[in-house]
Image (cartoon, rainbow, N blue to C red; front, side, top):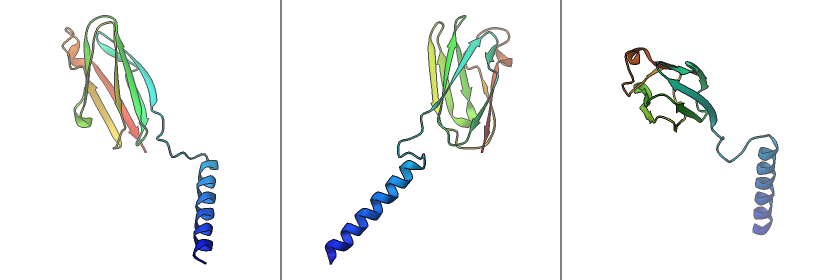
Length: 122
């Protein structure tokens, strides 16, 4: 009798897992959304990015002129982008809102106005 109960439990579990897999869901974590960002005196392109809360993202930042940085104080994110190289800033937004990042490496007279805005939605 006990074997019959165990067999039924295994069967029900297998059906549940199969149904979950066929529904398009996955046990693996979602692949991050990659966004290319070009950085130069005195701006980021794009200057505004919309993201979804809970969706992993990787910002791939490149610069050809001088070293720059990107810091989102409220999100505890900070990276440096070296001239001629790519820097990756990987994170998963955990809160909704608008967050303004600033260049964190002095790059000239327009440095103070150099911003990138993240709009995080539900």
